[in-house]
Length: 216
Image (cartoon, rainbow, N blue to C red; front, side):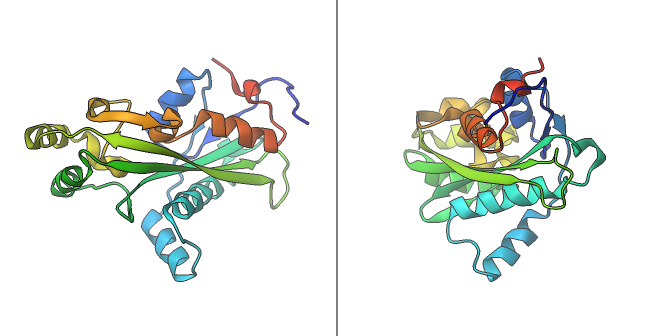
């Protein structure tokens, strides 16, 4: 049963400006803490243990790692912690951040005119209990993204802005890249990297009323 006893503190285990802006637009001013997780190392170890069978598994595992990484942080006490991670599934591959311009350009030449699935993993921890293993729950939300058939010049211009280099799949929906997406099938928030409907549903599992996060 959900209880609403004033404002519930929400900790965002992320430094993503897009996720922070999304929460703020939804009336939530979270405490942000950088999780400091080596995503590649965590993913490699999990794969070696047979824990990852799909893109959905990967983003949920990394979201869990990020949330758990800040549990002992002083600012995360007596709060609900959310960790998130996103990746694009396309052509049987999991596409994260391209980092390099040439990688981003090559990726966009494959994506244009096609459809990919953007997966965002969410992991919530109830860090208000003070117990060694606090209650937690998680879920991956997925949205189909249709990419416009853009030109080489448009790809070059977009990559030159630097925007697609540090985002999953090499695109954004809430920035310059939004013009290059022709259709979204599913929750738009998922494409940004944090699904507010999923946050609400997972909070209910932990007995938290979503509206208790509102503090703006």
